Image (cartoon, rainbow, N blue to C red; front, side, top):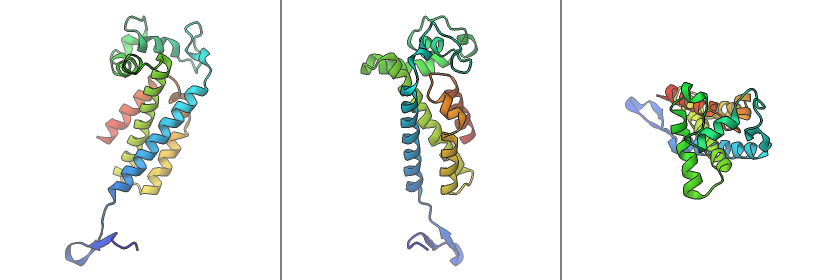
Length: 174
């Protein structure tokens, strides 16, 4: 056994000292890797996907229309009725990166989606640790989630699904 890892608890029973800093380091590493992978995948996509002239190219999603809604308050998007808070929650950081830091609108949207991908990965790891998975198991299942079809196809695209994934994971974490 590792020295300093096991100490005597109540009534002489050995108890395990938690090493939370290792979990924090793994969480940050997984989140950073997910964000980098999301940005890399997003920049490898053809720009025609966000062209307003083309629709239903990416698995029947209206990515161009959604992107217009993120950068303009006055765009006419049919999804604003179904998801009224989405443009407030997602559009605010996109516009802040666009106007505040001078990023191009497409780059700002991709950075926000990459941040959501990283937060989702970190939240998944934290959830797995909290429900009792061992550290290695939580890392393996988090990596499995990172290479799933959902992550590969939606964490690289400007869409509502990454935000939905994050909010579901946050609800389970609570």
